[in-house]
Each structure stands twice: as structure tokens, then as C-alpha cells.
Image (cartoon, rainbow, N blue to C red; front, side, top):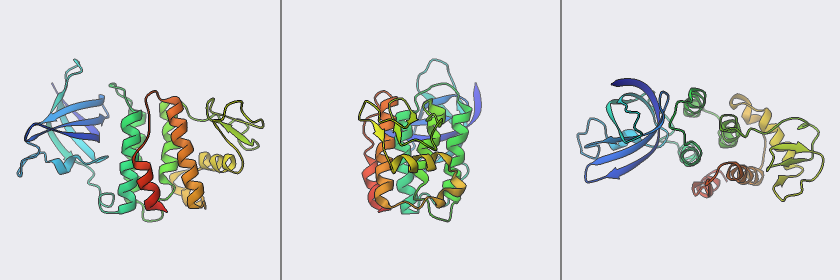
Length: 241
């Protein structure tokens, strides 16, 4: 049976001489793998260049509940990204977020709230004309809402420490070494209060931004089994510094 759905490209892998297997996070079916025959041919109906990381799609797909590799009937980039592929900073942010999402999102079932958040955030980044230096930090914090480990903000305004293991703010130093301390705790609290629209109010140094992203990735690794290292983080730090 044919189904219409929106999708977000997570990963495309060459398969054979001319084909590609692409992993898409779809609105209707969650994370799914699709084989696209002939995608590497010069005049392909669905070309390899349409399957770049975090590109947004409108799809007509065949779907079987067997969990096997699925097939695509129609695919188009919609909306077509106007700036992310051509802006060095935005493209590095997209590669970084793509690696995080690929390791964090596993469900082969629909999660429309998560899908809408990611889809809308990519659109917002593509349209943004001001500074996006804090975008990846805010994205990671907001993504935890949908992954199930958003920080408990109780006492956040007065706390000196953020316990990364338990996701809570406290006036007492946690027993483990996995925590934020002043002034990073207060900066993290500011981030939790922020939105994409006002994130330019966060006037942080490159060192502080680098520290927070390191700790956020540690926070993810604590709460997502097998999360591991994010290799693109170092490249993004260099571009933003």
C-alpha cells in the first residue's frame, strides 16, 4: 500500500554500483530504511544529491510492517533548503546535529511531536539571517524533552550545581563527578529558559560554548545507551571559534 509522509534524511549509504540505502526519520512510520535503485546514475529520478544529511522530504512510500528495507515511489525535497547547504557554519551545525540524531533516535514507530520539532528546527535554521552560534546548544537541550531526560528545573534559579546523572539542580555538590558548577550552572539555566527566537541574547565566549557542548554530549551519553562520541563536534568547535 502507498502512503504519503514527510521525512528527514539521517544517513545515505551506497549499495552496489548504482543504488543507495537511505535511513529516513519519517512522520508516519518513525525511523525507516529505504532502498533507492539507480540513485547514483547521472539522470536518476531520485538522485544522491537529494539525500544529504537533514534534507527535508515529501514522500510517497510503500510500507510493510515486517521491519525490512522499504521502497519509495516518489520523493522530492520540500521545502528545498536555501542556506544550510551553502553556509559553512550552518552546514557544520547540520552535520553535527545529524550525527547526534542518528545516534539518539531509534524508534521504528511514529513520534509526530519529535518529528515536528526536528523538522521545524531545521526550517528555522535555514531561514535564520542572524547569528546561529548557540543554535546547536539550544537544539540539544530542547531535544531532551522528546527523548525523555529533559532537566528538572525545580530550584534551577537558585542552585549552584546541576547533577547530570539525575538531571536535577541542587545547592549541594553531587557525589559523582558528573555535574556542572558555577558559573556554568547559571549559564545552563539561561539556556533552558531560551528559545530559538531570543538565543542571540546569550553572550557567551567560545570557551564557555565549547564547555557547555562538551557537557551536553556527556549528558546525552549518560542517558542514551551506546551513544558514544560525536566526531563532528571538534570540527564544529573549530568553525565557531
